[in-house]
Length: 186
Image (cartoon, rainbow, N blue to C red; front, side, top):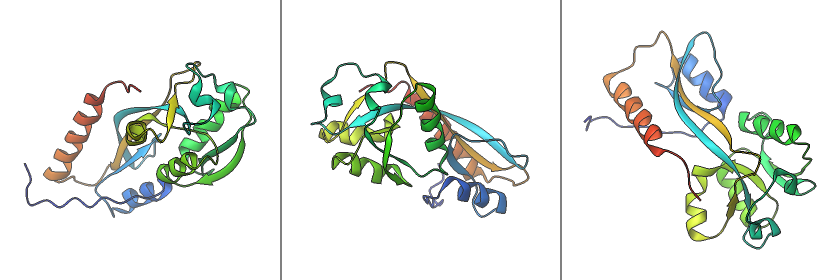
């Protein structure tokens, strides 16, 4: 469709994505739990389901159904405190009266997954990020019985910035792919 276009993809913390969009450094960003800002337009892409994640030998991995209460008192590996997904997870745990012991606080899902695989703690993570580990049987996921729990995903761009045809096409592709993904199945 646009064979001459080169896509440059970077991982950045959420606050850096907002800043790059506002500064005009990037055409658009993709974030979890997008929040409204006067200068930014948000295009919803869909949502990710949050699931309990454990290494295969953990007691939670042997349970067919798992309440959030099973996390109570467990070593827990989560996102850094300034990451929106962490704030969402903390609210969910508080709302259900669950107290975890944060063993590690990290800034990206890949490091959290490796830490859970190593048996350093449990986590609540977006289900779509776990497909490879489920296939490889290095992690076990359980939907919390109180759920499902979701986090929104969206793109954002500066309202006053003209988007190129390639950027519009890429955004349309993302919207189609996220919309076609449907429900996640373990």
